[in-house]
Length: 183
Image (cartoon, rainbow, N blue to C red; front, side, top):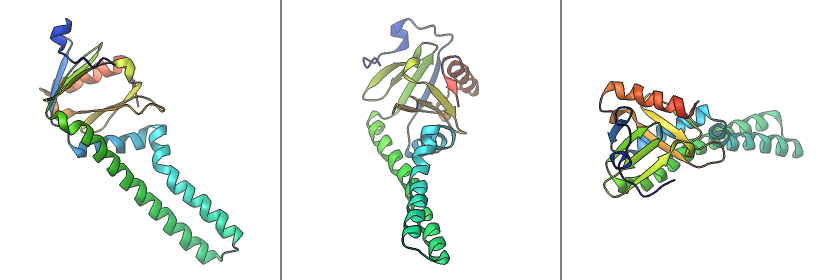
């Protein structure tokens, strides 16, 4: 990833294919992105389901070892799955707040994308990224979420509300379809 920043006009981009989004990131954007990732990617599902599945295995093992009665086994199972599921949801919210805290200092963002990649410029910093950094993307009702793959931690959030016109959402979708795998 090139962190020199800059503007696509400085890099001789073809302005006719570029699309521009201007937006202020929010915690809700990151929560929506993580929920979408949890539903549509194997890494996201594994992250959310790991704790409840571990709780089920632990309850079954300990109930078997301790010869627990069926009502105790069922109550313990329901309570442990409920608690770990609640914890998984809280974990996503905490992760969203942490991700937002990283981008919050950048302030209002301007992202310009074309077939080569994207340049994002904030009030205090900017960066350039080629599409090869991301492997896939997903679309939620309010966002485009770019994912670095199962083993990569890279997640980029592009709110649709930042589009300069409704056609820009379709243009960005077309750019992403040409360069990334859609989930």
